[in-house]
Length: 454
Image (cartoon, rainbow, N blue to C red; front, side, top):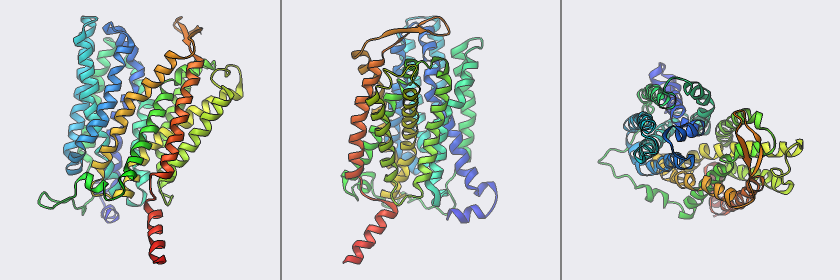
């Protein structure tokens, strides 16, 4: 189907123009939600609130990303043009309104209306754009790239992961403009509207793909999920949730860990490299899964590597004793890079794993429902890590930054976060091995063996 469409010639039937490029335009735009740390302190200072109060805007954005994907998955299933347009409007309007409420907050410091306006704009409105924008191109990519679904979805989701590395330096420059923080949001709202609208116009399913008409009876999402043992889907959901929770728990403390081991001057470079591992994991792990009999093998690899890297840093107390020790610094950086790669790989592999288990008929709705795990992980990963750091160990002064501000770190607290992530990773691999049944080629081979035995 897709190969014939591709061979017929012209950009209108080309899988790169109709799937890959629009997916990148959408995901490279919405992926900039992860640039929050670049400007969150500036927002807090400008509107006169503590950074901890402002940080909830990002948590709400991730929560509503997952929940909008869960509840609007059926709209994406029925009409990708409607869903991609919703994504374009919500994301760009949410960004523009965030800029307005920052401006308002600057004129009326300590005003709760400004803070709530940022929560609603960045958290809810942009969150809806994030969820629908994330889902819209995924099924289309898998339809166009039937023989390399993992590569295709990995490419798009890598764009989401790489967006931070691409946009962060641009944002740093925009912050220096007159008007600073709110002007940056207005400029980016216009830029991302154009990018996403172009993606919306280009996105198209391959000719010949038949979606059931309104008169045809189509099984509900839950009916499709229940076609396999329900523990199978619960296992996939839990694996996805744990991988994101552990990833966010470590990534949220990444800069502080880097300061602990004496690499303050290299913090920016390490952040960029970890972003590359994040994006590379999204593309590499999912493309690798195309060559596996069972895509669940990738999760076994991700969790095994994460357990080994975490255990090594725990055993050696690499965060507490790392400063000045090349071997321990290497182990700490390896942990950061491995967790980033596995965090990204978990995102890109889940839609293709679900398609192997439940087929393509309702994949957008099922994938959307599964992204609710992202919503809850967004509210737990960062917060659990912050709670552990704030309630264990002790903050100590550790020199000054480039601006002359005193740096305070809690090496024992950051080290203790690893106890939490290690336990969670072990639970995840147990789930991976016991609850999630073989799929894809592995399931076909097993069925053939059982038939031959009969």
